[in-house]
Each structure stands twice: as structure tokens, then as C-alpha cells.
Image (cartoon, rainbow, N blue to C red; front, side, top):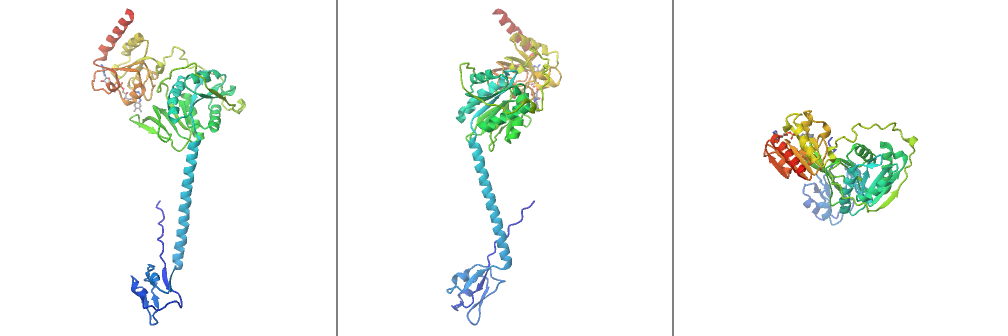
Length: 441
Ligand SMILES: Cc1cc2nc3c(=O)[nH]c(=O)nc-3n(C[C@H](O)[C@H](O)[C@H](O)COP(=O)(O)OP(=O)(O)OC[C@H]3O[C@@H](n4cnc5c(N)ncnc54)[C@H](O)[C@@H]3O)c2cc1C
């Protein structure tokens, strides 16, 4: 919609004040640029209102101050409309300034980097400790405390574990209503802590629990949340730089939440490095009570049913050695040569999405943007081209070995060792060599 045009400010017209003209000799007539003044027989000016442009030359030159400016009724209407508009502009400017002050006050009142310690039956998710490692870096840059939020029932021991991974303070809520994860009580617990202690950054694991909770917290607090970050940093204005793949992983976007606090980010397991544990480390525990009764929680946990994967279930994200296969494996059966090599190394078999999509291997083995993020000691990529969506899931592995018959495959750009050739010859040869070295020991 077009904005209504602001009217032009009228300049007024000139008129003669009765009885004041000194008949000075037509000075006013001589300076008028539009021939709007004529002097009559008495030597007094007659002003033509049609011609007068309100330039004030005649008013200024008159030695007897016999001329003045006046505004017609129409012009007066325009002037009062202009005054009203100016008032609105001033009000708007004042509101903007007030808003900027409010934002500055919010930003200034929040301090500290917090990590949510996710736990199931009293056992912490490793991603929480990984986040404490990254959180320590961020807190160091900001010059603030690194704190952990521990929620649950009989979870005191997790506070000590949080100290050993770098937290200097733990906010602890230990009560039966927090025993099993449910969105409502956990959300209320975090809101109570955040509103009271005002952290500037909150990090959570991009797990089922973390994704659910982070979204709920950010929504209620009306703040920003960046999911699945692969990089975190701090800019000169204390903003959290939240980097994550965007547009299908084709670019890396760095996202800022520069007007609201806390700034919230989730990070997938194994994206950040696990810090070295120091069991001697100590810190401060701040105990808080959640004012919520079990009968006030709508969701009830009736039974916990295990996913049946048991302890034999392979979790590639925690593996130290991964042998991954891609479309170059040609079929499901050929994955057996990768399994042999993985078994010799004490590792597991992973895959690219192409191999998963082809049905050669289950989805829980997929490495990459829509699969798992892994950080093994050794990652061997066999017949994988190295698309960006695959690389984001494995590029932080300690050592990457790539086997590909195409010497220009992008996977070689991240590989420490590249073997150009046919994987069906190279992989069995590698397995034979590893077996030989192991039996020699
Ligand atoms: C939104 C989105 C999310 C995605 N998420 C993921 C993800 O999580 N993980 C993932 O992996 N991909 C993901 N992808 C897909 C990704 O873009 C690639 O298509 C995929 O990684 C390619 O898999 P590949 O390397 O196995 O297959 P290809 O790209 O086809 O590469 C096969 C490679 O095998 C080599 N090769 C063939 N035969 C042999 C042989 N005998 N010996 C040696 N080398 C051989 C070829 O030279 C080639 O380099 C995603 C894509 C999108 C759009």
C-alpha cells in the first residue's frame, strides 16, 4: 500500500498592516520577484494574493514593519495536519529509542553459559559432556561461568560428573516429578531456573529429548533456537555464532540471535569433542525446588518399554573405528567385506545415504546430515564420493582413509590417506594386512 503523500508546507501570503506604511518610495514593489506588489497613488503597496509566493523579501525590506505574513484558512489546515504528522514521527522515534534501550537492558541482564544435562534413569547422555567442553570455550571468551542444569530424581551424582567435565556451578532440581522425562515438568523446571538466574546461552543435545525440550523452552521464552549446530563461537558483541548446514547442506549458515536472551542451540552427539574428565574437580551446587505436584502433570508414564535393541545394538556414533560403504559397494552382499575389515579393527560398518536408500544397510548406520554424526579414531570411506551431506557427519574423525577409484572424488579433500583404486581389491588386502599384524602381536 502506498503511503499518503506529506503535504508541502505553505509559506503564507503578505498583507499590509493598516496605518503603518511610511510611503518610503516603493521599496517593496522593487524587490518583489513575481510582480505581486504595486504601489497606489498614496504610495502604499497593494499585494496580489494570487501572485504572492510568501518569499518575505518585501517584509524584510520594509523600513516601517508595515508588512506581515499571514496564512489563509486552507493553509492553516495544512499546517495543523503537518504538526500532527510531526508529532507522530517524534512518537515513533521515541518508541524506537525505548525499544533499543529495552533490548540493551535484556542483553545486559543475562550472563553465563548453561548446558542441559540430559539423563535417562540417572545415566547422562555423553552429548551433555561434549557440550560442556564447547561451553567452557564459549564461557572463557565471554568471561562468565559455565553452568550445568541437572534435573531428575536421585541425580546428585550427575552434579559431580558435570564438575568433572568442566562445569563450575550446577543448578540442581532433584525430585520424583522429574524422574522420567516429560515435556511439561522439565519445561517448567527450566523456565523457573532461566527466569531466576538469566543465562545468556543454553546448549542442549540434538537428541529426541533435547529437540523436544529446547523447542518448548524457546517458544515460551520467545527467544531464538538454532537446531543441529555444527559450530559455535562468540562475536565481538557477545552474540552466539551458531553455524549449521542450510539449503540441503549446500551452504553453511551462521545464525545470530542478537535481540533476545537466552540464545539457544542444539548440537548433535559427537559433533563436539568430549573434554578430558577431571574427577577431582569441584564446584558449587545451587539446589532449587520445583513447585509442581505429580497430580498437576497431565502426562503419565505408565510403562517403559525398551526398544529391543539391547546392549548388542550397534551405535555407530560412539564407535572408535568405522568402515563405511557407499554406492560403490554395488549391492548388499558386498558389505560383507566391510564387515570383515570392521571386525578385524574392532569397529562397525557405516554407510552413505545412497547405500541406505538402496536398501543395502539399515538407516541407523547412515553417516551424515540426515544420519548420524560420528567422530571415530579411524573412518574408512569405501566407494563414497564425499558429498557435503556425508562430510558434515564424519569430517571431524581423527583419521580419515578414503578408497575410491576416482582420483578427483571430493572425499580425498578431507582424507588423511587416499587410496585410488578398486575397493574390491583394496579392502580385502587391508583386512588381510590388519589380521596379519594382529596375529603377529
Ligand atoms: C537433504 C539431503 C540430505 C542428505 N543426507 C545425507 C546423509 O546424511 N548422508 C549421506 O551420505 N548422504 C546424504 N545425502 C546424499 C548426498 O548428497 C549424496 O548423494 C550421497 O552421499 C552419495 O553417496 P555415495 O557417495 O555413496 O554415492 P556416489 O556419490 O554415487 O559415489 C559413489 C562413489 O563410489 C566410487 N566407486 C564406485 N565403484 C568403485 C569401486 N569399485 N572402487 C572404488 N570406488 C568406487 C565412485 O567413484 C564414486 O565416487 C543427502 C542429500 C540431501 C539432499
